Structures are given as structure tokens and as C-alpha cells.
Amino acid sequence: MTFFPHPDRYQQMEYRRSGRSGLKLPAISLGLWHNFGDSTRVDNSRELLRHAFDRGITHFDLANNYGPPPGSAEENFGRILREDFRAFRDELIISTKAGYTMWDGPYGDWGSRKYLVSSLDQSLKRMGLEYVDIFYHHRPDPETPLEETMLALDHLVRQGKALYAAISNYPAELAAQAIAILRDLGTPCLIHQPRYSLFERTPEKGLLQTLGDNGVGCIAFSPLAGGVLTDRYLQGIPEDSRAASGSKFLREEQLTDEKMSKVRKLHALAQQRDQKLAQMALAWVLRDDRVTSVLIGASKTAQIDDAVNMLAQRSFSEEELTAIEAAVK
Image 1 (cartoon, rainbow, N blue to C red):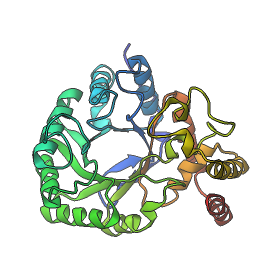
Image 2 (image 1 turned 90 degrees about the vertical axis):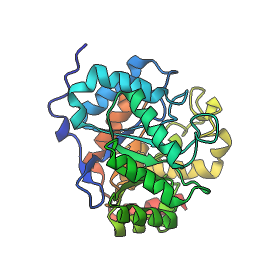
Image 3 (image 1 turned 135 degrees about the vertical axis):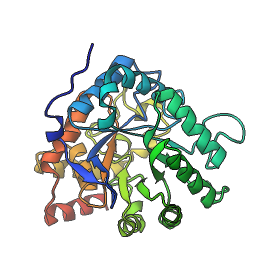
Image 4 (image 1 turned 45 degrees about the horizontal axis):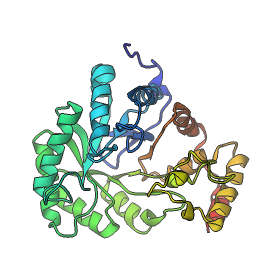
């Protein structure tokens, strides 16, 4: 069935410039970490992507190892891209990453030039693309010289296989070094992707300052703390939830009485704002102008709607910010 996107999609979204670059990203971006691998019905994945685009989400974020199994998210996305979005490629920002284990042997992980170049070639083949818009090094490599990793990103941009270079999961000091190397090479770092939420404040300890000072954007992943900052667990742990599934990304023992007490306080504050907790949590991350976008995951279109509808009320009073800080202490 031919896809005709909503004609008013760009009026529904806020677009924010990534640092001092010329590129604007939607305030809400869709991550394909879950719900796009082979374990998910492709019709559901298609519905999520179509609905996201209808709501003005133009940025789809992938990585070589997203699935499961690894690579399948890119393959399924590539199929939907060909069948539904071919006419809209120039309206999309497609990103992918390499840095975690992808194939056997010494060349399928970390940050060597060999791995990064091979990985992006494989990603482009899986997605049926000539280039991606953003290519990230997914995590620092403690053994490969940083110069080699950044030279590989520069090389791939100069080859035309990526339009922009980016980094993810880099601590502040190492991010500053990577940004400086890329700047000297003539391929500025576009954006950094750290974990950032009300419960994960590490970027506030120097990273956001570094990014702001260097004109580099920031896109926050896990802004809902793996689902904790939603109303999902307010009444316990549902049988069909991530925490109950044995997921290594959210375990039952992480939902301590202390943590859930904070969640309930935040939920009450969100209700006072006539918002869902998830909406307030997303708005809180976007309160800082140095944050370009937040990455959401979705298994239902309603979750996309909630995130986009948050934009109608994403500002905070000083009293609200003070109350939120008190709730999470």
C-alpha cells in the first residue's frame, strides 16, 4: 500500500540546530534499538516508522548491532525504506553506529579503522543506502589510538559514505580530545549521544559544557531510564514488562523502594502539570538548549504521540525545576 505522509507533519514538530552546524534535528528522534529486529512483526515496525514520520519525526537512529539478531534492525529498516520511504530519502536523517561486538574475530569490535570501515560498508548494504547522514563511533576503545578512530570517521565522510561524523558514550575529557582531532582534520564532530535522564546526570559533570563550548550537539538516549520514568511500574511490575522479562537493561532488583518512591513523587509533579510522567521526563531533558534531541523507543504509536504532544508544554517554572530536583535527591 502506497504511503502518503501527513501533509502537516512539519508543523507538528520542533526542529533544533545541532550545535553550530547547519543541520537541524527533530526534538524527538526515533531509536530502532528495540522493536525493529526479526523478533518483531515487520508490519508493526512499518506502522511505527510511518506514524513517526507523520508526526514530523525525520531522524531514525540505528546501529550495526541493533536487532535482535544483530544487523536485523538495519535489514528490516532498509526493506521499509525501499517500500515506503524511497521518495522521501532527502527528508530523512538516518544514523548508524559501530563500536560494539558485531562479528567474530579481532576485527569485529571496538574502534579500529578496519572495523569501522567494514562495519559501515555492511550497514549500507543491509539498508540499501549509498550513504548515511550520521555515523557514530558507538563507544571509546581503550586500546586503539583515538587518532586512528577519528581518522576513520574522517575518511568515511570524505568517501561520501556518511555526511557527518559523531561519537557516543564518550566521557567529557575524551570527547573533548575527539572533537579537537576531528576539527583539525576538517570533519567537525556533529553530535554526541550520551545516556541522560533525571536518573542519569553524568553529562552535567562537564560533558554538556564541553559540547556547548565546542558547538557540538547532544542527543540523549534512554531519557526515560529504560522505562522507569513512565507510569509502567507505579503499581508494581507487570508480567509483560521489560523488567519482568529478564532483560539485562532493566532488572527487577533495580526497581528498589527508594527508586520507586522518587518515581511516584515525579509522577505527582507531572500530574500537576497535566502531563504524563514520561512527557515531563522528556521535557526535562530538552530544557537545556545544548540538548538537540531526545531519542525515544516505541512499541506502540501512542508512545510516539505522547512524546510529540509533550512539545506543547515543555517549559518549566523555577519552582517546578526545584521540586523535581528535590524529588530525585
